Image 1 (cartoon, rainbow, N blue to C red):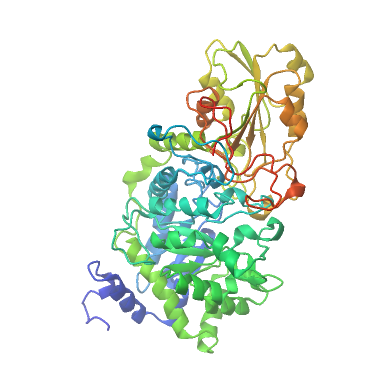
Image 2 (image 1 turned 120 degrees about the horizontal axis):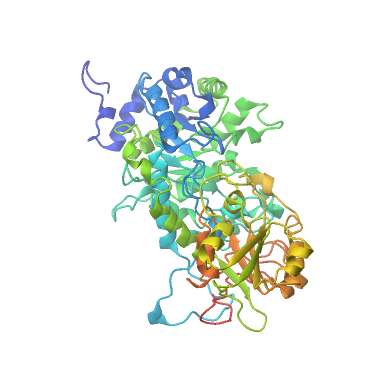
Length: 633
């Protein structure tokens, strides 16, 4: 019921129950205002008309879309606050939710802490409990525990850095279960094993805060408007199981396998009060997820009890017709009727409004479906505290890239490293800090962009000093004795290799950054003729190889035989000192493989439990320097 003239509307009363506020505000909205709440637009589309007049419900930035080059946290906060002021000048003064892909830290912001990508966190292990003795010898049927508490802390740190820039919503975590490393988003997945992925959904609690014991199942939650941000479990569902690992492809599997493997992490996210879920670009047995009423409504909202809202992926509904977006009205109808609540448009805002209003007025979309979608969106907005605290908190600005967070990232790096080979007849690691002369080589030895990977500053990542951090070379120089001469050559000549009298060499090789479909590969050899470089160096100098990649790469038998040690560093992020912490023996290796390391691309897909399972290094494999030369699980 509308408030009497001069009386404060119920929806603006912070002490009123959330559901009462939702009903009150929904009852005041026109159809067009409801439709606008279902729209998410890119920040470059923002205008006074879009926010103050038409009242779009949400704004996001694409990967790499920043206020300007090397924009500071304060620049980001000012931008979001300015948008919020426009939204609050609309008829009903409904604030926007601003969302960003903070998938390994606040990775779009220059100078923010960049944590290891998820595949590295999937390798992490909690510290050894000395009361329980040594780790068990490796066996592939033993499920290794993962450092869920570390991942929760990373969520906490990420939330603070995101909040510092005035942003309310992180499009994380990705809880895909990657079953084929040819997929260009493999590094966004914690593991090929659904139990590991499920166990690391603790990042939801890190981002949103701890739910109380009596919190209603499935109801969205946020503990603190200052310290936490809304999370988004993605991509529902089966994105990691597409045929041949094709991005946006088709997951061909039974209902039982979909539930057993790919749906497995979602109940845990929902139990932690995850506020939003993003739909997958992919299909399940030919049906696009963006148009699947069975999966979005019957399963996610019905069977799993999710009461937050479902958001599409970037132009996700456009993929429902060919050519993409050519019959946009059809795309809107299919997705909204399936259960999509908010559409990441991101550019055709007024076209979306026109089509959605038309579809409701002609009865193709029932008003009940619109009301359900907007209720869910408003519920999350009220829970987020954005009505009472719409603007950024300047006191948080100093947390972005702070020492405490970088130390946490450094810890995450060293816990994510997996030692795959250590010596031929005796241990090669740890390396001597006081060696007279050492060679550092490879494309990835001194490249922050390469070691951070995709989704860093730019959507697909980049090369060079793209953000603040410590490269592997810089970490080596910091770690060795002042008397040690460090010779760095990205691609050393034979003359340098032969005449150097090096105590040992460290060769860092790996992948060029990529994102999504740009990273789909059929062959997974080391780029830049990396195997040739390794062979040339290792033929003359005792050599440690560090592989910097978002997935396993082919290590040919002759290369593996020639080198002395091999470390999988995944995509470690900004803190290269975490790598040297282990290489020089200040900390032991604890990481174990979250995925199966194949011998050749011809074996793919390969997952633990397969018939005739014969990888180069099995799932769960990892060596330690100081306890044993056995593989450990």
